[in-house]
Length: 476
Ligand code: HEM
Image (tube, rainbow, N blue to C red; front, side, top):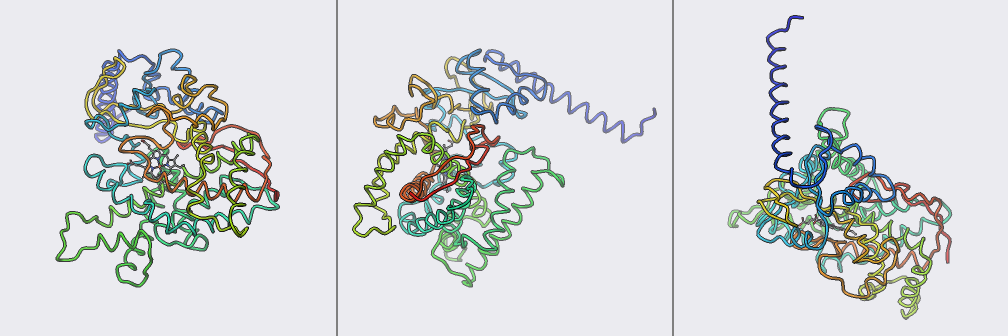
C-alpha cells in the first residue's frame, strides 16, 4: 500500500505523540515507584474498576477500601487519565486543607475548567482567590440570608403543598426547591415560568458536563454542556445589560454586582470585575451550591425515614418550636431556625454518613513529604474524605446513623462535611438555612413511606441515591 505525503506525515505525528505520552507516563511511573499502589493498564489505568464501583451502595468507598487494605493510607492509582495519589486521615487533612505556604491548589478536571471558565473562584488561587471569595461572600452573608428568609420559607411550604396524593421523587423536588431559591437570590428569577425552565434546562446540561469526556464535537455530553453554557451566558448578558440601563432593577446579588463593577471614569478600575468574571462566578455559585444542597436534603429525609428514633427526636424539637409560637401559624422565624440544636446534629450526621463530596482534589504546588512519602510538584493528590468519615476509631460503628456523635466537639480536621481552611464552603449557612426550614415544615405536617429500598448511588461526583428516594406522604 502506497502512502501519500500527508498520510505519512499524520502517521509520524501520531507516532511522535504516542512516544512522548509513553515517555511522560514512564517518567511519572518511575518517580512514583516508591508510593505503594498499582497504576493499572497503560492509558486506562484502573479507570474501569473505579467507574464500576461508583454506583455500588458504598460507591467509591469500596474502590478505596480494597486498596487501603493492600497498600495502606497513602496509595497511587491511575484513573480517568490521571496519575493520582489518594491519602486519608487527620494529618493529611490538616496538611492539604490548611492552605499553609501554598502547598497545594485545587485540581479541577479539564472539563470542569472549561465549563466553569478561567476566572471562576474554583480555577483561581492565591490573592485572586481571596478577592473572589470576598465577592462571593455577599449573597451568602447573614444579612442577605435574613433578607431572603421569607422567600425560602414560602418556597418550602409551596413545594410541600404539592406532595400529597402522589409518588414523590425527593431528589427532584429538592433540586427544584434549591435551584428556585438560589436563582431568586442571585438574579430574582421567578421560581416557576418560562425563564426558570429555560435556565434549569441549560443548568442541568452544564452540570452533567463536569464529569464528561472533554470531546467538543456535536453529539457529545461535553459539546451539549458547552452549548448550554453559551446560552446561559447570553441570558446573563441580557440581564446585566437591562440592569445597567435601568430597564430592570431588583434588590439582589446581580444588581449589587452591576452597581459595584460597572466602569465609571473617575473610579479605580483595578478592583472591578469584568462581565466574564461575573458570569463565571455566578455559574460557580450555582454549580457548587445546587447538587450539594439537593443531595443533602434528600439524604437527610432518607436517613430520617430509616431511623424512627431519630425522627421522633427531631419531631419533638420541631413540635416544641411550633407549639411555643403564640399563634399556630406556619410563620417560622429567623431566631427559631437558629435555635435547632438537634436538627444541626442530624444534618452533621447526614453529611458524615453520606459524605456528599467523597474526596477533595488537590494538585501539589511544590514538592513536599507526607507520611514519609515524597510528593512531587504537579502531582494530583486526593484527600479521601469518605474513609475519614467512616473511620471506626473516630466514629465508632460508622454505618450507624447516630446524631449523638456530635454531642461532643470533634477534633479539628476529622469531620469535613463543609470542608476546612481557606476553601471551606462559603455556602454553608445558606445550605443549613434551606435544610432546616424545609425539614421543619416536612416534619410538622407529614409522615412518609419509602417506595424503594435500593441503596445504590448515582454515578456522579456528588453522592446521591440513584433511585432519587421515591416516597408517598400523608398528613400527620
Ligand atoms: C449541604 C450543602 C453543601 C455541602 C455539603 C457543601 C460542601 C462543600 C465542601 C466540602 C467544600 C470544600 C471542597 C474542597 O475543599 O475541595 C465546598 C466548597 C464550596 N462550596 Fe459548598 N457545600 C454545600 C452548599 C453550598 C452552597 C449552597 C453554595 C453556594 C450557593 C456553595 C458554594 C461553594 C463554593 C463556591 C465552594 C468553593 C470554595 C472555594 O474554593 O474557595 N456550597 N462546599
